[in-house]
Amino acid sequence: MAWAVPEFKPEEVNAAGKALQKMEFPVATLEGFKALAILNNWRSAHAYPLNTFQITLRNKARKIERSVIVGSGPIDVRGAI
Image 1: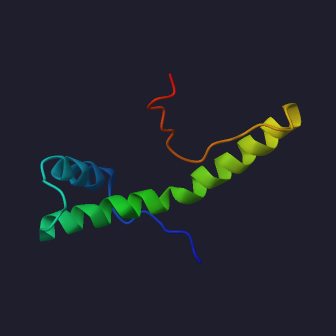
Image 2: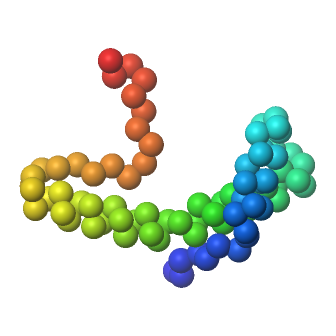
């Protein structure tokens, strides 16, 4: 599988995000689907560099502490305190 490349300008990505902020969910309009497609492309296009960074971080951290955990997504801290 090939890695995605950015297809939209940063201004278009920002505009898509702002458009989605104003919409109700679930998105059911053509404008909403277009905005989601733009944001999904941005997310996919950044998956490769983020994955590379995570692998490098994990390898370097394991040289310091063998049992280290490097996360790969959002952390849910609700109820952790």
